[in-house]
Length: 264
Ligand code: SF4
Image 1 (cartoon, rainbow, N blue to C red):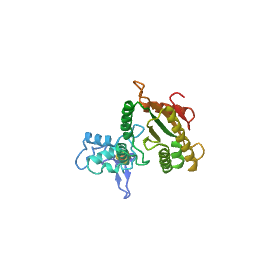
Image 2 (image 1 turned 30 degrees about the vertical axis):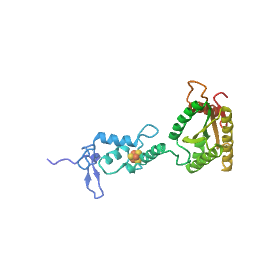
Image 3 (image 1 turned 120 degrees about the vertical axis):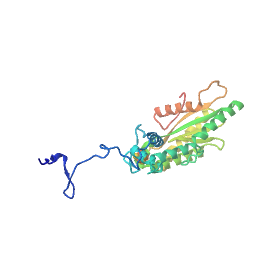
Image 4 (image 1 turned 45 degrees about the vertical axis):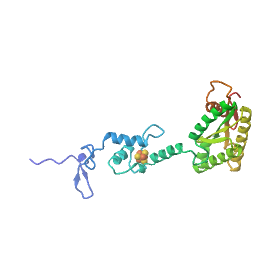
């Protein structure tokens, strides 16, 4: 008895008119590349090096030419690509290197790591000498809007210009650092709260004038400043940076483009 033909739903016709079954590779048999299945631990290691996107999931951005991070990681384990082909990995590496560097590459100010060292020294010096020192926490207002509306180049220009304004205001014995993103910290030696508020007001006014000079709409490029001071006569003090940060929050909550201390 002759064999009946396959039902139409199971048949496809290729360009040469021959029939062929539609087959999903991988659903039928396990894919082995170069005769090896990549070791899961090694794949996990590559995935850990890539890291996760801000939403907590794998990036899966496809910039490396692979559809998913996992496909890329398997290929990397098999020696068919390297992490140098992964832009998120490279930018993470750059960020880490910058954090470790003493100088912030964009603004030329000291880095946060140097700031922490300097702060420790200044607390010790203040306790020895009995002199207060002031701390400013400066944050550019609406910085995300500047980036969104005018581009990252413009944003970088604003950061560089703001750093220059800080450089004009502080004395050579003071210390200015980029804390991160659009935040800066200034340490003012031998300065109490009142003197620090005076400097903070100059910083605020100079950043506002800078925004106008760079032709941004009024009120877009401004700065809020939180002020604190370390008083060696007060035992068991809170971290002065934390106090200045809280004052900054008050300046923001009060409407931005203003100076605030912990108690005003
Ligand atoms: S570029 Fe990197 S993060 Fe993006 S899919 Fe490829 S491996 Fe993943």
